[in-house]
Length: 357
Image (tube, rainbow, N blue to C red; front, top):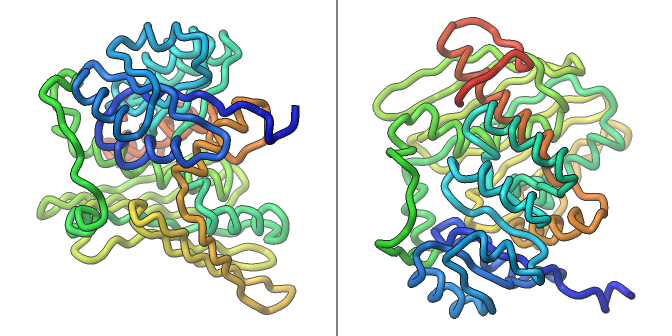
């Protein structure tokens, strides 16, 4: 069977809330190798409306029923964070490939349980770190792997803006809500230190690991003033490279995200945009061999769609740059280590980190 004859990968999306509406439904509809086959949400009114809007053929209010559908190939877990691990395990045990929204889980113990389920079932699991599919970051990764040589240092920052909702409300449709939507017990946003690290820090941690390799030790400080949270984290990589992480929510300025990287044969300076602009990062790559700087245009900045296409390739056994189960586990470990370091005022070895983020 040729590539043109390969049937589309049938995806069911669990959760019809804002992240699915803004990212996953459209990504599945636009993906060249996938089909938005089903939508599942306990809020039947919301699921039905989204199915009509996005041309999904099947509507489910029961997750087990969707997983029992033999035509379903894989699922996207687009629920609140506390549901990621149990819903992923259910899908793996049903023989379905899984793309789970980030963060993979909210505690080290949770993600280790999921890692065990991946090993036990032999299933495919991908974490929704869509920035790996940003063409600018892809170009940076290729230069690091092929030309940069030894990495000396990486500085990365992710600074959400007080104006981000003004920016995004101007470009996004209003999310459709339902009074019947299922919510986790308690308020996940009540602990701002945990919520901001999980929601935003997970992107930053995965990017640093993706570019410079395993993080083995962190030393973190947290400043909380006027409703803003600022983490400065000194990072030690397994390679011996130095790292610095700046996570600030929210800065009194525009969205401010990017990284600088210094290596043996070159350097990289990157600016990343608010993800809902679907604009590739502007990445300037300086190659010492030619004493010149290049920047990929990255015209196709729909990294949510590119992520879905990568999910299908990975589920079919092809190579992909996606974050897998090990990446997801290690990201949660690093975030837990950062919280522990803030609490104790001491450096923390990531391998020893446990508990909730």
